[in-house]
Amino acid sequence: MTSEPCDACGKGVRIAGGIGDLWNFPTSSSGGMTLELVDGSEHFLCFECMEQLPGDREPTAEDVAAL
Image 1: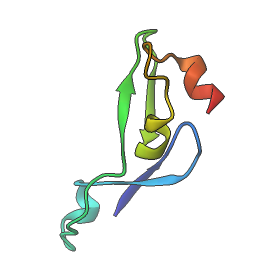
Image 2 (image 1 turned 90 degrees about the vertical axis):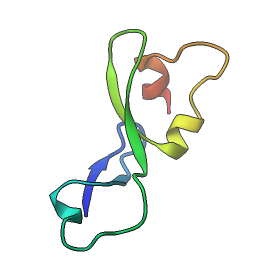
Image 3 (image 1 turned 60 degrees about the vertical axis):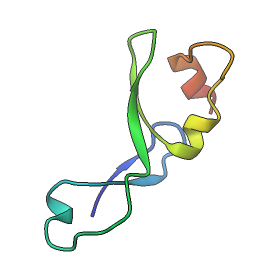
Image 4 (image 1 turned 180 degrees about the horizontal axis):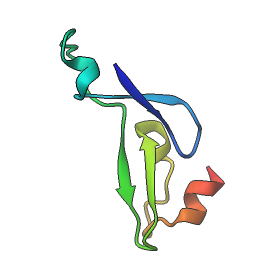
């Protein structure tokens, strides 16, 4: 299993695919994804943190830092 820390909360998040899944074939999906924000920044966020981003405007790096 491969994991990466969430840029907002620091929790280790499972990443589906990769060499870690070659032998054990888990059925669960990734727990987050990398977002490219309108200010040009990229952040890997877990789904729980992504849900906390503002929905009334495009999120920025400042919004991620505020989480």
